[in-house]
Length: 227
Image (cartoon, rainbow, N blue to C red; front, side, top):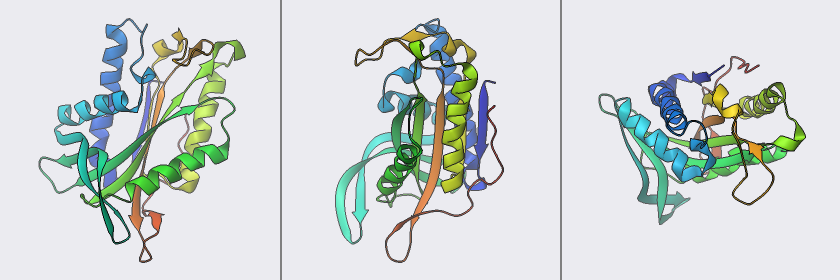
């Protein structure tokens, strides 16, 4: 399996960009003969691959830009990770991105906390039709643990299931077979690990009449099976 991509109707305009995103990641891997992986670095680098994909797929996009942030009636200066709009159409969206490390012992509560943190940041934006959190989930598997590909997919499947249970509007999973063969020491100097893929999760948010952050309606409902 190379890719799973599911988008709600509201976010369908982003699907071509995420499909191109996978192609960009693949091109990078091939250019370095899979001895260096594009998602190994950090959130900012990953966003750059997606932002390029937006332009390549016919959208307009800007990353890490100055904007206004709102908490209740309070207005502050801040930055947003990614803005995307259609060239021909009315859809505009602001995305707040977080890149998270998924390891075999990551707790469900930790994963759910990732979504909540992203949602709170996304709800501070008011400069587009849609506001969303974008969570890049990067699995990291220590070689010594002898985690199988089946174990790996079950680990990612659990993250997808938790997202579906709490409400999610887009799921995109890039899973190149070549990346499974790559083993590298993490930047913090821990033991050698595999970095086999990248899961992207988007959740639309809105503020209720009391100013509380809520998951927007029309989430994905059909089961998504990675295994």
